Image 1 (cartoon, rainbow, N blue to C red):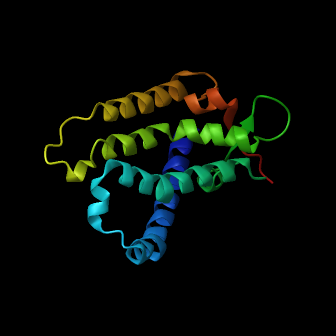
Image 2: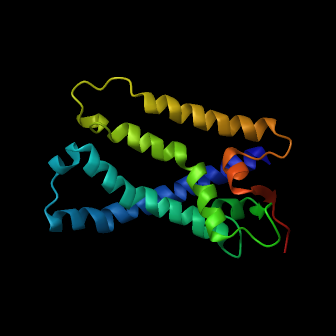
Length: 173
């Protein structure tokens, strides 16, 4: 089930990337032009972080939260691979708040990568881009999550432990 979880996550990332690319080119790039936001606006770490938060992070958090709190109790990637999220805190499915916390912790390394990239100045505009310690934290958190999933008998990652959830095989209908 570990490989299926990884494949489901990669599938979800691909779905989110496709949605992100579509939104960028169909909506946000034309909107930036209409609002007069030029490329130099993105030289500011705060501006780039705000843009990243609004156009990438929030939609991805919403995707993971809504799909896991849905009647299917699974993201599209999880559904495709026969997985779901179970509530360990009580009877009933994972609620919206629980799914949000699970998603937030799961995607924390991703968000820390954005912050590390964008501050103090976006990496691609920094004339002297040195080592950014935040990227090491991204690796540590990602590694910790993978280690927990691999080493714990119940295969729960940090996001599952914090949210009181567990990935399980879905029952065939």
